[in-house]
Image (cartoon, rainbow, N blue to C red; front, side, top):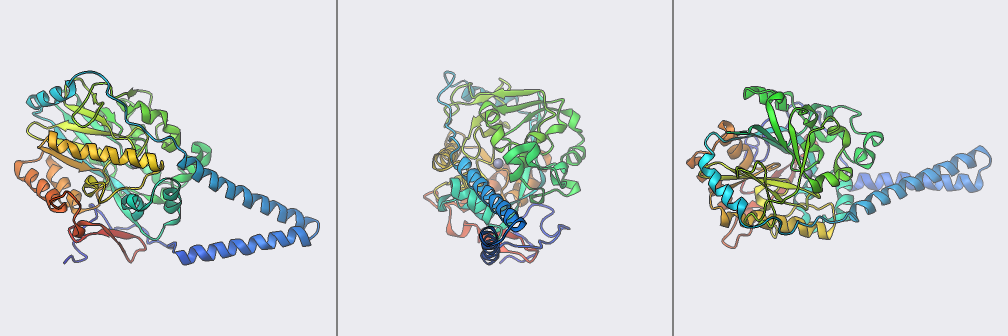
Length: 443
Ligand SMILES: [Zn+2]
């Protein structure tokens, strides 16, 4: 049994720690009331147009035009999203097994390599967005559902990773949520078109102690000390503090950069001049046809895990006698490792969903090639991240006992056939503050 004081799913600082309670929860009944009001207004406008005279007719006509325009715009947004070209993993590029050999050899030089997960706020997501890809949250339907579903939302933790690299110095993986993104008026259609309309500051929550600069300072660093930022993709919960790192080289896949106008929000990266837009041209890396040996020393291998976004990238970090997979949004939680059991939504439609599933299968297959590999997901709302990964990696490395515990946690989630056990399946549970949380028999 789980008592409310041992919440199974929330990262540090959650829930109910000063966030305003929700004033309004959208239920199907409220949606029906809204639609009824809209229908009455529409009838009034029609009546005004045909039965009224003079000014009444003009006002009614304008109202009708506005309604039609708004409706058409809504349809256009949904159509545009579902018709987005689906991402295709790049074919075999480069030759031989260079990254595989280099990655294995880098184990000898990994002494001093540290990885610190830092939670930089939380983002409000819907349960279906996270867990209902297999139940039809794909393409236009996913976009529609995400907009309409305000009844089953929860705060997902947002993690970034600070890598202390023995020869490259400080490397950040993503930049989390930033203070600017929580201020009223940050998002606007004027500055970011459609994407400016999609993001909402109310969906970003960042307590002061979770600000990236504050956490870097706690580890003895400042943003100016960071030499490299590896961006897994350009979604807003990953670009928050990017504009601070003007002195660093920002690594982002070419595919993601080319698609920046669809899901990226330009003001969140407008200060960056030093981009390195890479392709996966270093050759095969086990389950991945293409990869990028970022520094040419095998220490960090980037792989294309398209699907969640057009050019999404995951990382494999050589730690010596074990390896870490920083999967980012290719794997919302450890439970997503078997996509037949559990899958996230997909914005791009059926083909995008297939690409996303293919990426997860490749990530999961890496365990055979690298038996000492551990997965570190970015938004995992379960104990795996809050009670194991976070405290274990507080010193930047995993001891053999900690690795054994992480492996045991993973093993208990899946049955002998590799399916997610019934008791590990996530469920939504409403909370009194108007939000909710994710629970499971196996926390
Ligand atoms: Zn994302």
